[in-house]
Image (cartoon, rainbow over all chains, first blue to last red):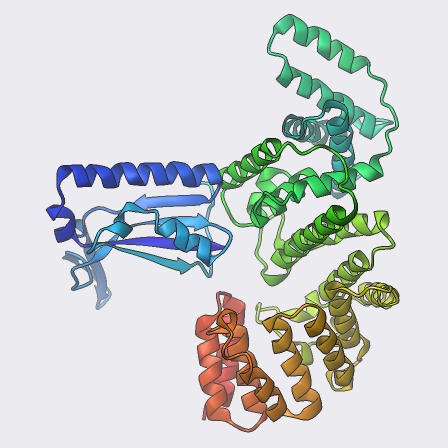
Length: 123
Length: 403
């Protein structure tokens, strides 16, 4: 079963962390990735740039209109994700709980099963 | 010989060659890698140069050489050992037994079901890591990591290459059957493109189950599982529309069912029912055979289906069995009786919000003349499923009963 474990960040919460705390998150992800690779459960993981770097594209009257900033008017934004292939939902939840973000109030870790996939597997 | 013939021959020989090597050299991990390399060499050389007179001996010799290459890093010793390996006269080792031992080893209880499946397909099925990865829709690196982990675990568990005895053997055979059924279901539930699509996975599961059945013809559950797979696989062409939409059993074009597979499945199911001890696969095969026996959906012998589910519920209690029995009960005693049986599942944690419970309830509500209730449940079931084909089917049903 494939699951998307998405990391929802609040940039204000991240900014408020100390340097040690930020470093701990970084190394926590590193260890988590190594573990997933060894168990053969990691398909891919990607981190996204800060939401302030995002633009929203819409087509109005056949012309593309580009607006600076994220689409959502929210405090929390998608910061990145893990795509895993594991035994069942319980295992996906167990994995998600090991992500350092899950232990920090204000950062969210969400688990959802993949329903359809297409495209190249080997990037 | 065509490409498919080569592939078939190699898959047939793979477990025999691996079994011979493991028996001779003891270690599973290195032997498995060596056999994969030998298979690769054969698939490159044979189509051009022709199949050698003794293909199994050829594979054993090449794999032994590779193994010894791996084992000895010292150059001089490697030369000497390879020369010796090349001289080995391919001997006839009874290969049939070894395949079963291999299968038992790959379904080692310390492995997760996903690892058991992958290892079985590679070591016994002779599939490459790339083929298995494609079939399970994961990158090759992911599958390679999983297989190498599984091999390490087997090594760590210190398994010896022999069939377990008595009760342990019986227990392990159940795991083997479960893994084969898992492989089959993986191929049955979805379809996608690619060289090795999921129908091939179902065919591979059938081939491996046939192999086990050939070695254990007296085991009723092995026969039952094979019958169940054949009867299910026979319906494949009728199960979806050309657009990929699901067609429920009662609406399938029964002339599109594979008659030869059905006849074989029914024969096996009937023969296995005569065994003194009945297991869940035999009963499920008997249910599938009852469905296959009816030329139209209306002619289905529902009292018999219901009775079989009743026995199944007794020997292997499981909310899914009760759910299926509710469908059969509704056919014999009316939708109200089916709905009443369903309500006994409401307190079951495993079933709460399960799309199968929601969709069966929707179906029975529709039959009992409650389109509003059916609409709600079809919609909820569509949201709860992780399969697009099923979601489209349930949404179509919802649209049909929309009040």
